[in-house]
Length: 193
Image 1 (cartoon, rainbow, N blue to C red):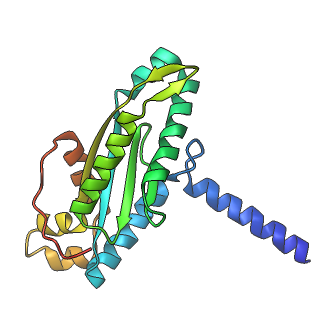
Image 2: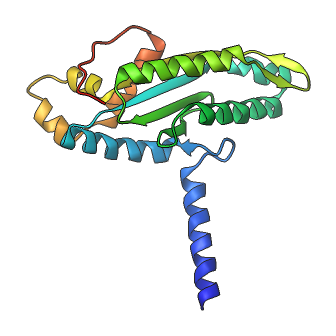
């Protein structure tokens, strides 16, 4: 009976891992992240806690797949993910958001800290090129960072009470994607973190 429970637990753990993690990189997947983001937004808004998000995009990554093949592209994405893990804190949440897009959720960090982390990530990825069979493959990484305060500041004052009770993760993600596509410094109030 004990052995059966152990097998059931192992099976449940594996099913959970398969539904929450990206099979190629081992990072969390977009589905899991979307659920987590809503919980983090609720917690942050309720208890006045800050968190930040960094979005990373490997620009023109399709060229790597075309030039070197998809297996090489997969290898580069796994290497990229390992490097990303080595830079961020253990409590940060790493997500494969799209084919060549990644998100880092940084609990208890304001946008300034997230921007510095994004710069460190970008520097490491550019300064240390990737290799496949002795072929140097350089990646161009675009980054954007914002925090929960950016979301709060974007709300109309009359909508604030509703959105603090019912946050809209899609709005925050759209702001993050816009910041990636149109880099600029959005104003942010620093509530600590």
